[in-house]
Amino acid sequence: MKAFYADAIYHNNKEHHNSWLLTDENGNIIGIQKHKPDPKYKTTSFKNSAIFPAFTNTHTHLSMSYMRGMADDYPLMDWLNNYIFPTEKHFINPEFIRDASKFAALELIKSGTLTINDMYFEPRETLEVMSNAGLKGLIGVNIADVDNGILSIFDDFPNFKPALIPHAIYTVSEDDYKRHIQAADKHGITLHTHLSESRDEVRFAKEKYNTTPTQLMNSWGAFDVHNVMAHCVHLTDKDIEILGNKKVNVAHCPESNLKLASGIAPIKELMQAGANVTVATDGVASNNNLNIIEETSVAAKLHKAINNDSTFFNVDTAIQAITANASKALGIDGGTLAVGEKADFVVVSYDNIHMMPVYSYASNLIYSSNPSDISHLYASAQPLMADGKVKVLDEDEIKDKAKYWHNKISTMVLGL
Image 1 (cartoon, rainbow, N blue to C red):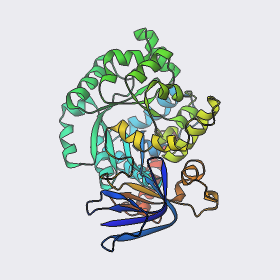
Image 2: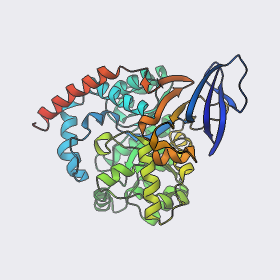
Image 3: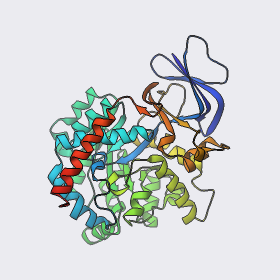
Image 4: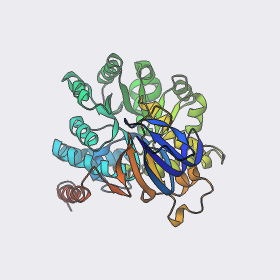
């Protein structure tokens, strides 16, 4: 049994000051209390620090992390067709995915993210790497993987579930999309896809199907299975009404959408309609990092400005978007520090000058912090990172591998 002390513990939109987080021998939360715990607990104290639920990133392409900065400042379709797709054609293989997944896992842990929802290739490699690193969440598979029996391998990785990942309506045929939706329904798993990310996607839907991407998906039954819809930028009033009525889980990726000039998702309208809005980074190739706090800070400030409402997407809403709401979106337990949940939490230090003074630990987290302020990450009360040192991965080896793949991409794709 363990007890963790911090100047503040954040639970249910409330800061419990000078308190202890108590856990049992299985890494489950017993409660939060003010007084010092019984001697039967092994105690750890974090000074000038606060404990928050570990963060969840609801839309990632983790193994694109080696593509960071390789094709910045291009339009989405140019970026995809002339840089990203050619790189994937050359390099997508188990070795590349395994190394890139480790690289991504290191960045995730350093930025306080424990739970992910990944959409990419070679799911077996990503699944094994992420599990070995102590992370959890959803790993994407396609219908061909399901036909080949991939769902059974998840039995060996209890912290992960599969998700069906048709990419988008402009890359996947109607028949294949419907097969993914039917498989999600049959197996009771999440459908994870891109929706209304760009104007080109909307134009494609109008020309081919004479409707919007959202209304097309609705007609196919995509919102009648558990789902995560990434982006949701270009929406009509009718689209928003559908997404709200269906209680769709939206993965909002503001930095990627801004950088690729895709637009700004109507988050306030979606929330008011009833959609469950979360925040995600998208892939590093379009972001260019996996820093979920930076992403959430941008979301909070961006939507205050475009709605002319400084009270909208406040710090509590922002934190919920990457904790409780995100867990709900993925259909998994967690996201709060409630009794009975796993002790999955981050420790944030308030020692650095940019984190002082502290009037609100939550406000400083969202508006002032960066990954260097995250000192610890715990999964089931076990440290994946302690005092800024990742304990479950070899950082030097991962950096060396990144240099190796950078050289290969530079030569074979970019001609440098």
